[in-house]
Amino acid sequence: MLNSKLRMFQKIIPMVILLIISKNYYSQNINFDDILEGQNVNFTKSIISTLTSPQFEGRDIERETISRSIVYLESMMRAYNIKTYFDNYRIPFKIDANQTGYNIVGLYRGNLRKRSAILITANYDNLGMAKNRTTKDSFFKGGNDNATGVSAVFQLALFFNKIKPKENIIFALTSGKHKNMMGAGFLADTLSKHDYLDIKYVINLEMLGRPFLEGRNNLLCVQDTTNTLMKQLNSYIHPEFIQLAQGDVFTESFEHEPFYNVLKVPSITLTSFNFENDKYYLTVKDDLDNLYLDYLHRTTARITLALFSLIMDNKVVAFGEEKEK
Image 1 (cartoon, rainbow, N blue to C red):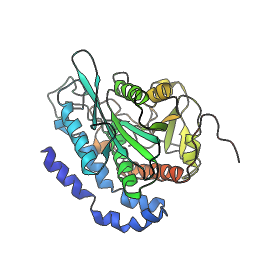
Image 2 (cartoon, rainbow, N blue to C red):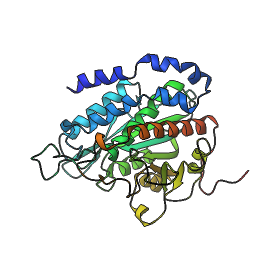
Image 3 (tube, rainbow, N blue to C red):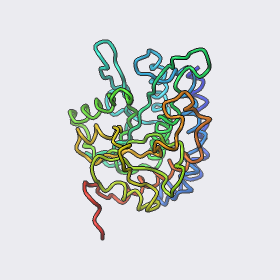
Image 4 (cartoon, rainbow, N blue to C red):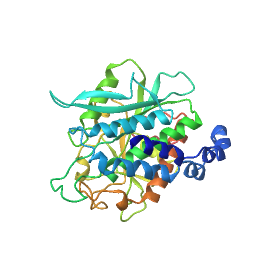
């Protein structure tokens, strides 16, 4: 069943869409409308509908059925020509003495053999089965948390595979978010111990599928210490598109934190979740029907445009406040 679904997904983004905008991709004269057209919203929908389907049983890393999610994500990496960063996509880590979890890690290799890379992450797991298993709502779908982030990672990966920028970009799908961010912590430690590419900065994508109830901002930036990344991204799209998250509610851990703690590089989480706009958070109703797909689609395109522009301008992301010119 998974193979038939994968073949169907491969047809969702026909090559004609990419050919329409290829002249802009290769000349690097890319605008928001180009990206919005290239990042087919049906591709996003297909990823979310698959990850939230009953056969995935809520994507609990401690259940055997998590292997279905892993196989699917590896297949997507392979189908869309996202290369392995390590020997395999699947990178194991110990949950406990008897159980193993997995991160899925891929790489876009830039067209210059640089020794640095950008790291883009999102967690793919969720809470698994609910106590009440007598209805169709017997599992936590994890649509916004965090199938939306996974879909954004794949949209970014496909985009950068087409435009061929010079920068290396690692795309990592982590697990164990609700278990003290075990996968993110393990990946940060693994990256610090292997002499591969030096990570310049980290962007974690989390819960992007529901807009704020009020205000002009589309995203919040959660960070552990001041860095220039948020303002640099905003400079390419809108000065108020991303706002710095503030207040006690954002003292909870987000998955950029292990990378900041271990790698000592600028690290942020981008999210449209603010504890007020998502009544389905950590419930069995967090599904595709309760997402705003057009909002997710346009937000992903703007993140793509901002990151692409930052890479093309070869700007340095640094700790501290961005200096006025």
